[in-house]
Amino acid sequence: MICFDKAIECIPDDGWLLYNKVCCYALQNKIDQALENLEQAINLEPEVKDWVQEDPDCENIRYEPQFQALIYS
Image 1: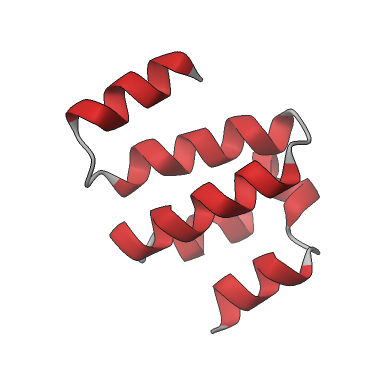
Image 2: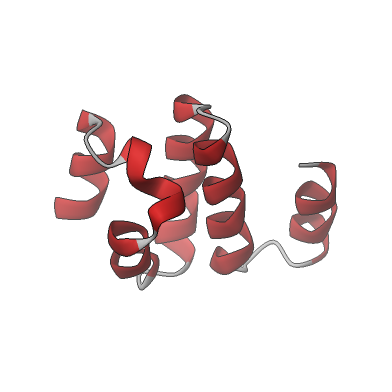
């Protein structure tokens, strides 16, 4: 995550960097961190909504109420 944080510091408006961080957190089963970063990623790059619904890396966060609210709001 340190590498992602450094990259995000350099390019703070890149939603895809945040999305990849979401995937890593989801794979580590760090649900709260994944959802927090997902919200930021969607705000920067709305297309993330489409990707996260299909990405197998994010399967374990899809049924969380906060995920549903982010995707369908």
